[in-house]
Image (cartoon, rainbow, N blue to C red; front, side):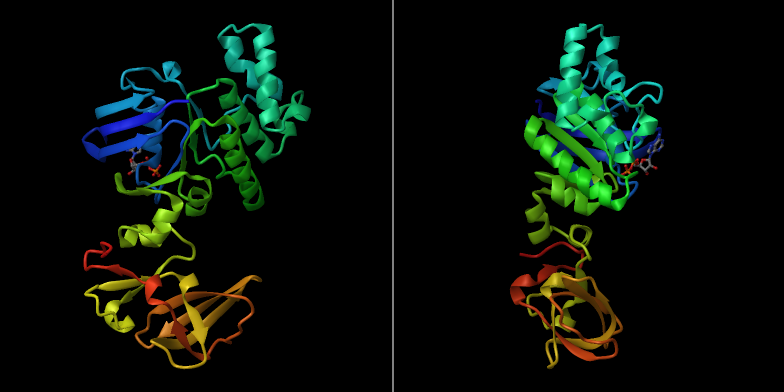
Length: 334
Ligand code: ADP
């Protein structure tokens, strides 16, 4: 286990600044997820921690030691990539033990740690197979296993589940969460998928254009987003943003944010009303698209089997406590 500290860390490619300056403290044993839209600098940040990119300025510390000039191989970190990066001509066992063979570890140690990793990832019955004989999820488990045998202080994951189909992604997500509980290691995980971030993280770091927008627990970010960007990035479907006069807010806000799940539909008139334009029935809940008189479409996610057919005039109800208030610059008020 190791903590990771970024103190005024910046990164430029040539003259182009990509990360102006980031301060961040990642605790021992914490699961931290970097999330943000494509190009916001998540991978660059992770690769600097891995030692695969040079830090332009500032201090990066791993386990209390400044690591800026420590080569990747000497850092106490192991990285799992989106492409599995396992050797096709080696069996699962050989892939898992490869790093240790290079380091000339004893046959006994190689066997012990290979078996430990295989057991942590339920790969015991696949040890003699070649990667081509494995499913995508099993291959990614081998890649994670290769990180485990290194017994690193910090695990780094760069979009490890992006190549898997939706069902497998959900499954592997749960496995990675379990693995974190089992190993209690520090894990830093990059994804553009806010659901992955919400379900895995102890703390989420939301990035935009190389800057940290907000750091907090998934609940913090969902309940108290500091600005409209975070408010709309966290939560799916995303938060509705309405001009405050439309909602009748007297609190001096420019815009009001209301999550789709905080809205309910009614037959009678309400503070907001409009016409249902689409109705997506998903089983447990139904997502209604409601066009307001202003032309704006609002999404309302309603539990159960309430049916309002497209074309129907409806009222939208909500509690004041579910309203997020933002000023003209999009910064949360109060
Ligand atoms: P993310 O992982 O969030 O999608 P990246 O960290 O890959 O974002 O990229 C951040 C920014 O840095 C992007 O604008 C990207 O174009 C730029 N970038 C990444 N790698 C290089 C590079 N080797 N040279 C120049 N610019 C780069």
